[in-house]
Image (cartoon, helix red, strand yellow):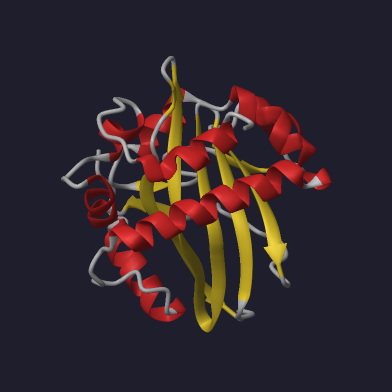
Length: 223
């Protein structure tokens, strides 16, 4: 059932204007998509090597999916928000999937501190969480429960659909993803795979491939 909340695309376009992240109607580029995949691989390697991310490494083998946002930017004054682009990979009996491209953003009101950046990992732990990822209207905390780890998760880890982890680049303190909206970047998915393709076809059905993502998938396998 559709809710009365604003469509994710409208929120993300507004957020893109505020943050200057290019979430607007810029033409999709296969090169830009590959650059995001490469940054996602670097981010994953950083989390794997970080001694403070033992909790992330412990839960990754149980995850049904993983979203990597190499750069989540928080900016604005009075009207603000955070936003970035990321990739979603899913795990099935056939192993890890190719990446599907997404935008992620949230809008907030009140005094903001600009210029803050974080790397974000979302471990999707349940089938409900994965099903929400395949939709065109996905709001963390509404369509899937989210817990921020490792601090403050506690017993929530056993029931949360999504576990979120972040590494700050600057003063990005008190990260909260409750209410953040994720929307597929359909034009990037089309550009990267050479045809129109939905996230569910990429992630669950393994319908397409691109050798440019082999390094990222290898990193997920621990290679």
